[in-house]
Length: 87
Image 1 (cartoon, rainbow, N blue to C red):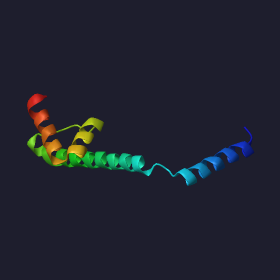
Image 2: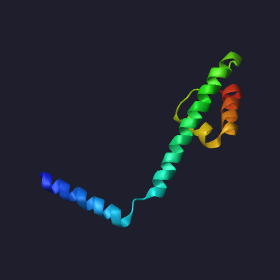
Image 3: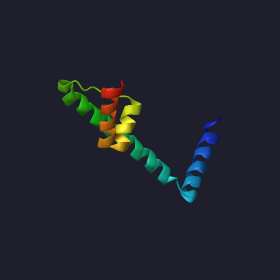
Image 4: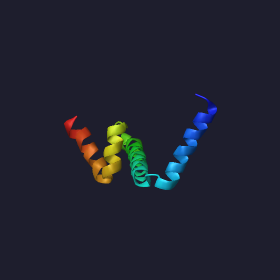
């Protein structure tokens, strides 16, 4: 494609977004979810750092970080209980 066509398409998309507005709400929800998952991974890191002396270890992956991030401290306790008694 020619550069003028690409510039015209991008300019048209910018105008459409200016008039219609960008969907901010879904982007905000995705951002909050990512932040909660990162906080969950941080919870798991501290649990593994301090719980290592007690024999507690919960692997840090997307599922465990999501559970501990979305459910908070009760989710972290549930992961420890599952790791201790079930696995």
